[in-house]
Image (cartoon, rainbow, N blue to C red; front, side):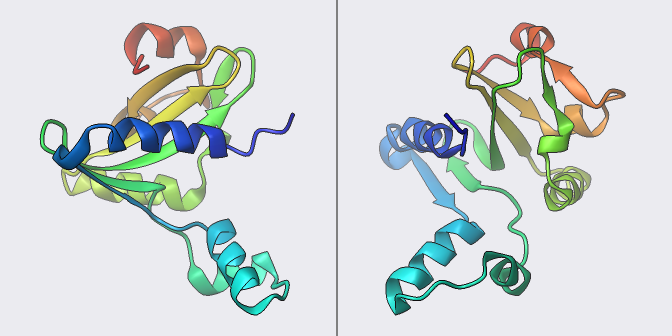
Length: 148
């Protein structure tokens, strides 16, 4: 079965929504969401590539404001590779936004879902931005960044 990432995003949203009024969660619409809305509204197929050019990249999947954890951008990544999470799963705009957020002393986290083990990891962007490798071994994430 193909990994679209939607199941991981749904789990992530449910986690934060379950916290009730103590948490505000905003999901930035991605190209697929907007394309689906357009198709529904006008009943025609539009070019996803062209639409992405018009909309431009979003800074992350979510903006979270939580009474306990503060305010942060959250990018949800799901991955089913056996040994590691490859940084090639991060888009250029996500790299750029996470670095700009870090420079401004803001918080940006990558929530990485290992679909194979159903384990989740919360990794600060500063850790990924300063990594010397092109991926993180699941064992390293398990030891240092386990979230769920």
